Each structure stands twice: as C-alpha cells, then as structure tokens.
Image 1 (cartoon, rainbow, N blue to C red):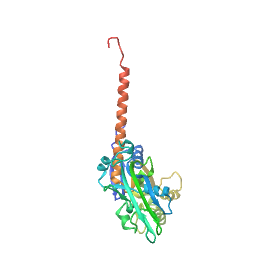
Image 2 (tube, one colour):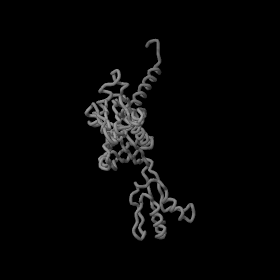
Image 3 (tube, rainbow, N blue to C red):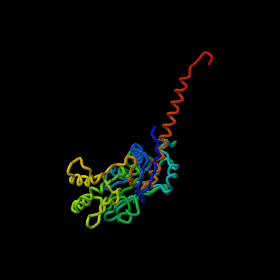
Image 4 (cartoon, one colour):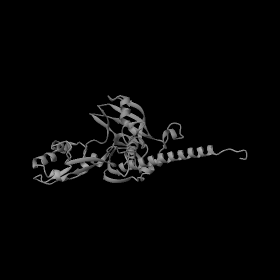
Length: 319
C-alpha cells in the first residue's frame, strides 16, 4: 500500500485581488478538484432579478439587466459572517424573497445636461453591509478616473430608474456567481543544467541560449562564462531553451545541456478574484466544500456497508 499523502500549502504572493500559492505532496486530481471548486462551487451574491421602471437610454432592458448581474457584490463582515447570513433562495422558507436569501438594490440616475456615465457607485443597497465592488484592488482604484464599473452612458435628458434583487448562487449555475476571474495551476518546473556540456559552449552559444528564454529563467555574467538558474519558477514550459541546446547536439542521443521536467506532486496556483471575496477566503471556502463532499461520501459508504452487513445475517427459526 502506498504511503498516504498529506497535502501542504505555501503562499508565494498575496494581494487584494490575487493569490499565488504552491500545493505540494499531492497529485493532479486533488489540484484540479480545488481549481474547479474555486471556479464553480464557491457561493457569492449576484443580481438575479431586475425590475426596470424607466429606461430612456440607448441600451435595451435585457442588456442592462445582464450588465447589472455581472457587477460583483461584497459583504462587509468576513467569510464566516457571510456563510451564516445568507441561504439559497430555494432553501428559504419565504414565498419570494427576504433578507435571509436576497438583497435589494435601487438605481435612479438622470443626465440633466451633457453625457453622464452610470457606474456601480450609483447602485444603492438597502442592506448597509452589502455594496457593489467598484474596484477589485487599491491599485485599480489609483489607476482609473472612473467611479466604478460602468453600467451605461446617458445622453442629455435620458433617465434610468430600476430595482434589483441579488441572490446567493454558484458559478456552476451562471458565471456571474463565480468569485474568480482566473484560477489556474501549473506543475512546478524542475530545471537541470549539465555544466560539463555547458563548459564546451562558446560565449556566442551561451548568449543565444540565455536570450532564448523570454522570462529570464537563467542568469549569466557579461562574458557569458557562468551560466546558472536565476528563478526556476519563471519557467512557462515554452521549451525555447531546449530547442536551442538540441540544435547544438552532434547526435540526437547525446545528453542535453538543459533539461526541463514537471514535478508531478507540486502545483503552482494563480487565483485572481473579482472582489466579492478575498483571495484567501476563496481558497479556504473551496477547501471546506471539498471536505464536506468527502465527508458526505464517507457517510454514504458507511450506510451502504451497514445495509450489506444486515442483509448478510442469516435468518434462522430461532431468531
């Protein structure tokens, strides 16, 4: 029986809307399960029902409703409070919607004169703890002149007045509930340099090898005498350096100066959120969902095992 694996996580980079971490001592099935759950099964809030009272803009009602649905909504209170605060509308006891399963928003904007951009900043929530995400990070806020996500542009005299209902959902149902814009992973690269072969290269050949890498994985001196690895994590498996060293071989079966392999038990995740949840909260919530699924599966297997054992007990006239 193989030794059991206990996956470990190391955070490499953490920002307002981005996290990069390494998952190791596990296999691709676990890594892909985590990626898929982050995309499709972490619950968030999104506008689902829109009642448009006035719309004299050039944008149709349907397109306007779709744009409203794609605006990220943030709950000020943390992940645990968010989990306790809302339930899915299908699981709620109310007839239509209530504060336990939904949040109401109002938007009423008129362009009195000139052009006016209607942004998510104009979308007002009835619940003081729920608000639109105007910017996913402080860096984005500092690099723009807008006041939020642009919903529509109004000409002189045009008017939009509407109400909207946001509900809890998951990305598997619609992409507007996905908490991440990007969730990818790659195998950690393992790069090996054969210094004996590299020592036979001319400075021109080493220069060509160094310049072949678009992400500057390698480093060298001014005369291209020393050739080492600067940062193997920059490798994106383009194999440009491998093509160069292969072209220097006298025979195809000769050893290569550079070899690149994938470490099949180490994965580098890059996750960019839309602002609804913090990046670390998305990862934690996805891990909790996987744990719940495994716990449910274990419970079902135990029940089936108990039923099989009960059926296997022989029945005798004496009980």
